[in-house]
Length: 472
Image (tube, rainbow, N blue to C red):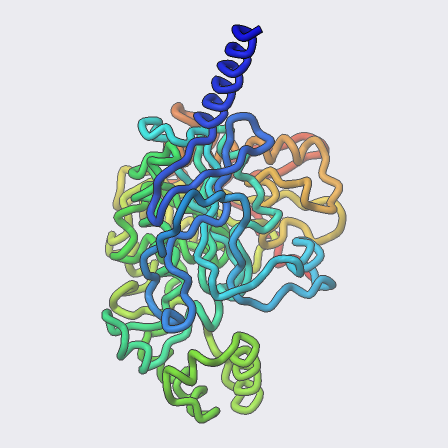
């Protein structure tokens, strides 16, 4: 009986050790951390991992600071808060599509990222890594929106997915002379994209713990997230860490974005603060998000001036527009993938084609172009701006739309294309395939669509923009 008890305890210990090995405690910046198993075998999720200090109190409107250390083992089982923003109206078009965000907490303490990996603790695995940057006009959104719930699908294909939350709106992109004066770099206003750069640096320094390759990081984003991808590629602070880049519905060689200079932004924002007789950092930092939002609205109503909250050219983080940097060949010499949707906000075929042609002129690395043309089932909105998110994350379970077998086939193939690009810099994989790079000699877009219940993949030099979607 004693021998039997001994073997039972040995078996229990073996099971415990085996489970621990599959979900090991990792040591990262700040302390130790342990993730949670997902429904996908072998994939561990780490939610709410801090990549910088909470930007609150005296750290509001300051460059991201190092992570604050913690005691013991942090169990990374909950997402961090989303950045302060105005929630979607649940009766608006996107409020219905994204199921709104009423249950998601908003907070200034928002600098967290999330990791899905099939190789936790395997430092020598060196899997490719993809850092996702959400869109939302630099005013709203968060890295774990339901339509972006694709970590398990990506990790199951051997790509570690990291989603990032960053400061938004008036907390993320507010410039003022007093803020620039106190900054060690004499700048203000690019806090949100500095957060993204800090997350990219964190990934580079810590991702080996999760089984990732710090020298193979793809950055990808949609809408303002695509603009952010371009900003990170243009910035001398972050561009050396980019191994590949995907820009979704962010245009290409667009000319003047970001176009506002820091000095201009500071003057405009100082005038707004002067309008309300707020002339000290202490006063500004004492204001709540709701108070500042009301001030922006009241000031616009009183003066007719609209406050722009987006990246600025500050001659530190950004020394020029993405287009200017691309033309000067001062962006990463890496593979690129640029695309848009057939009912996007505008026709992006020329700026994207121009960018890809420029890369063919300046580099031997490929640039791929695509058009997502699927007219979504359920209404007449078509391939509207952001409609491709359900496909690249294979997240149909979070949508009300009646997707069919063709949509499922298209989504699975798109996840393959995007993860192949993260692995090889080639959406086809490590061999030639249907999707060819865009060049002046062969100016081809991949058109991603569904015909009946069958996905279609067609190369064309005449991508058909169908006009902006009729959103209500």
